[in-house]
Length: 440
Image (cartoon, rainbow, N blue to C red):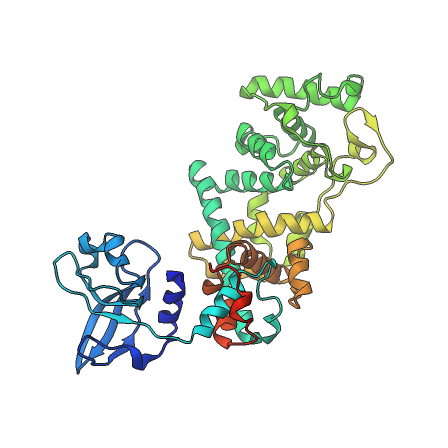
């Protein structure tokens, strides 16, 4: 049996309260189970219990067997001196704290079917362990949980953004440029886009915001794509030669060192997603007059935000996917799906973290509102939830479901999930113990 299951029982009082008693048979009445502690120290802080008319306040430590208190070295750790109750599934010995005082140890009695349900859930081979029982989850509880998951996901992304912000000397424009560049890689080219944004500071791009050709020269040149050995068919291409000429001047002026052109991946990508096309689209964004990040913060609704990030590659790319090789003519705009991915993963988290950093609740709420007005993502993880009966109405819900998948379902953290807790405590359709082949 896992200790975390006992934590779950204690936290939600899913045990027989009558069974809790001290060595003299006096009932232990739990007034407050305490605050769950995931860090070092006792499992629950600031608990309150009542024994024979005397109220005790302190911490609670939980183990599957009482002897584990000593095995884990708590008997030598003064951080456990304030433990008022040692809760166990099996009391196999008496234990003392570091001061030599015997701890009150009580066995926790509970419905064994709860544990069988827990084992059934965490051993389910399906990607979504509770998929067959989600429909029984209270809709209000589900929506509240998904909102919490969305905020959790935004906060995780905020931590990553803040690390970049600190590394840039608290420069929001530079941070936005780096975050935006990263997601222009669309997974396959994430790393080279990150390297490019580091090699070519935004402060240099900003000086040439009114010249699209120079911004493209800076981006393609710093990306290593103007290396003569990379696109041999382009050596007589006027546009390509113009970029080389511009980059030679600019790289000398700013002492730029390009990254290696071979880092970029073209294989197994749709041509419209080639990094050459994406770099030209990024140049279109970076040449936005008035500052891209300030205009982003000023967007009042999702429609304005989408319009701001709906850009096209330069005219050369209308009939090219790579330098020097013509193709069937077609405009290379970012497209609704690509724009939405950029907004969901880069733009909106930046708005949210800027709002939290400046204690601007309205800006944070606006970021969340943007997600409610952007279509749900379409990928295999979301299709799993749709097949289980949870169809996200917008990116607000698809982001929450991705957080649920990545941080709870995959790790089988069912006891930390409100859906999982509800399924375990409901006692619905349990398998027989003979079918539970593996204990977690």
